[in-house]
Length: 162
Image 1 (cartoon, rainbow, N blue to C red):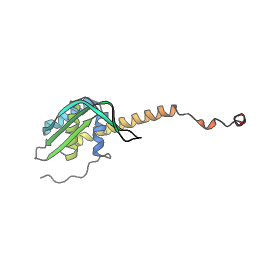
Image 2: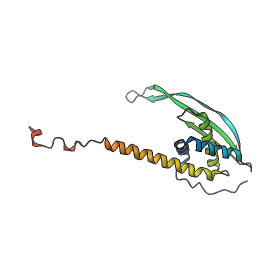
Image 3: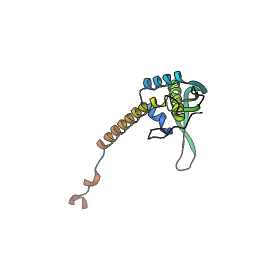
Image 4: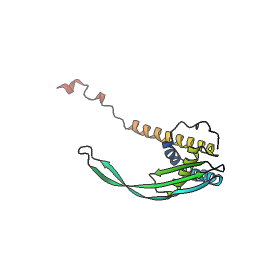
């Protein structure tokens, strides 16, 4: 049995890991997953799959469910066993059509969650994903700021009162 290690030095929750990894270049995520697969035994609990899923929304007025369209979906679930016999499971469900990327993210998720040997390699990749998402957010906010309209100046002249 492995001694318990301190919690991960990651400021984001596990639910955010797939989003952060998806923001990284796919080649770096797959390369990290390959290195981790060489260190550990990886077994597919659910084979990686990709396809389309119906997007279900609820009508705000009557509360009825309706389906406005389809979205791409890739899922994978793995069980990772380290050399010392420690087991950890990981999964990924992505709004993406790349099943191999979903499997890679599931492997990284399992290694990070179980803090298996090699989990330290994933922390810089998560940091890159966090930086890329912050950059995207800043770009979106800058675009939003350019479209902002100031209506406070309308209707302030004396002619408008007549």
